[in-house]
Image 1 (cartoon, rainbow, N blue to C red):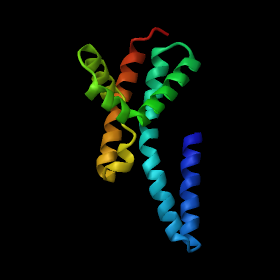
Image 2 (image 1 turned 120 degrees about the vertical axis):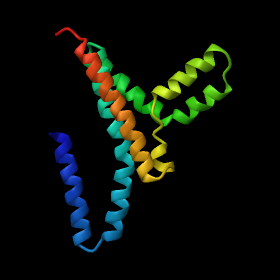
Image 3 (image 1 turned 135 degrees about the vertical axis):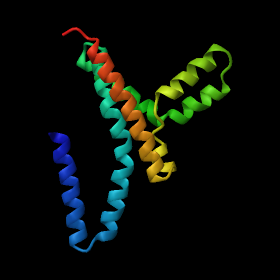
Length: 137
């Protein structure tokens, strides 16, 4: 409910800026919000997945926050995977595949970045459904 209200508030603000002659500001704000929505699209199902894995809501929140920080540090993880050797390389490479790179939102074209984030969101949604189906209530 709160997510829908936030989205509607953002759309109303952008429409109001456009209607009052501040179209350039509305365009910049819209682009900034579009770039920020990709990581949020991934973090929502990832949070549900993590909440279905662990019993504690606090631990699920901390793990989701850790995923958000790691997503912003994904280039560092990729560099560690390239520089490591042996089993460490395999571990860093696996970690780089599991954690989405949130820098894609700024670097890639919008359609490609959107497809990237939707794919990660779909994977986390499927994992959350699988994990929840195996849980005993």
